[in-house]
Image (tube, one colour):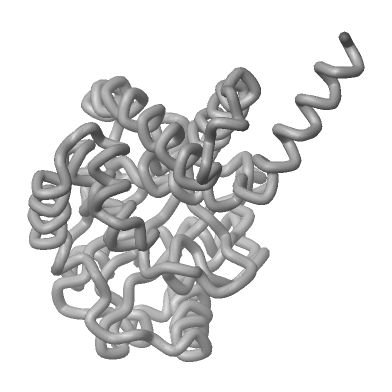
Length: 289
């Protein structure tokens, strides 16, 4: 009997494990948290173990549906937690070794936060993961017409957050390196030339590390803040660890004077930086280590 159970578990894992990266992407896009996404996927695997798998014709669709529904349940408590979050909330940073396989950048993830959970699910499943509306409807327990309407409404709300032009990776990383050098050396003239007039800066410290409690908006104010930060960085140091793609945006990872890691992702339009997203919350950087 034990051998049979072991064989059943091995068979379940054999079907599940190749789908785990896709399921984790779905969960992360829904929740914005690496740890929560991993927990949801593991919960889905436990449920998969107890499923009559012989009756499941399409394991990928079945498991994607399971993960999405678990995420919808989780979003209810996540929204309540974010209402009491200290300072700006940013999704966990994903430092991507390869090119992202979709166009869900950090600004788009923030725009998704403003949607209802059902709108978010319909948009992500259909527009990002290419799921047909029949499956979307079954997943969110709505009819296909309602699923289409939810996705269309979401699409209209997030349109401005989607990149208008594809930025060449090499050019993006060049701008990221220039931003790092100028911001750390205090070269405000060079830094100012990199920034769009309406640039915004968001820093997520989660109440665990110092960070601006509100977004910093506009080139003049961003430069004022960066000038003050540069004075501290010249005194205490900031070491570049990695330059690469973070949540679909050019950026870099640094080790700061307190020994903690920090990620900086840059939204760039027409060669100018329009958004600076700094993750300082150590709870959200554990997986980066």
